[in-house]
Image (cartoon, rainbow, N blue to C red):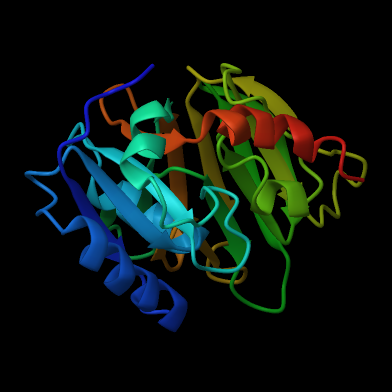
Length: 257
């Protein structure tokens, strides 16, 4: 696919490398506002790309990232040359985030979106005790662990992989439910779930064993219940170079051990 590129909008993290790259690119290509530009070019690392995708959620804007951070898994290689041509030929990847709904110890309700994962983790020295239900059916009456996360295919190579969860192809209609340091049941290593299910997690003994919940970078403290579904309405669009596509990066990760 080749698209017409008339203008680009550049956004950058506060890292010196990102700021220097932005100044260089703006000097060569100009800098349209995000609303007027055909494509938003994000300069930084994976964290900044997540922030940009959240900021542009449901806008229909295409996001093309170039790595000026550390890992840069979500980013394309950095090069100043022929950027409009590269962007014009880039492949589109549609991200459908998870919707996290929480109830905290005071009864307050809060919602947040997660492109990578929703993660619950113990707040104190004591392990968390969780009850896990899928589509209203209890699957784990009591899970004792340091944490539990539900990852999208896009996020399966991030924290999920570090917690020994499975890598999911980008096109797979699946979510990865992965425990962090499970104590009981000790041998449970997680589950692959259809992406249309609703996952409900109740925190057992929340006063004695407080738990926090995080959707990407939005954290809610002392939750008592967390409900997670894949969004039916929200989308973000990320672009990747054809010779280094996002699908290929995820596939390659499975052969890096």
